[in-house]
Length: 178
Image 1 (cartoon, helix red, strand yellow):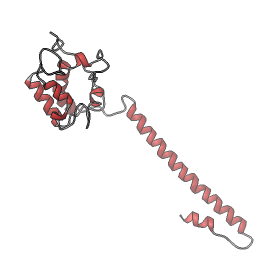
Image 2: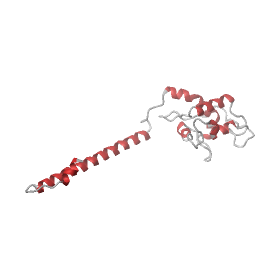
Image 3: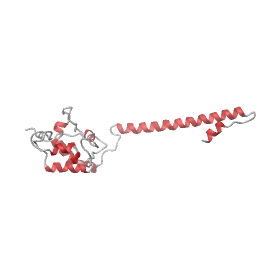
């Protein structure tokens, strides 16, 4: 602010040209300093974005987060990943890893944190076999203890361990395939 005021001042006498040149130089320094700050800010922001996008640059999930998620992962690997993994139809939501699962969580998505009854994911796994859209399709529904695990997980916020991608591997026989 002081520099701008100085650049607008006028001097009288023989030193008028020197005063004007000094004012322009100081104004130029002020502009360059603002450019440097903007460049530094942009570079810092860019580095943060890159660090978040590059695998291995994020903090791995805590042991506690992984242990808390383990029962949910077991239910998914036993009942969902067979059909919703890598070999799924394009119309099916993907549940092949924790990153794909995390994309299904949120308001207006398949899994609504804190609201299992409003979560389409929870609805379809609790439908009786005779209801169209029941998952897994035709045959053996998930157990009541598995329903409790999924319900509690959604009620508690449906958190998926962040920091590294957990690949889900199908367990046992394909559910409801008989």
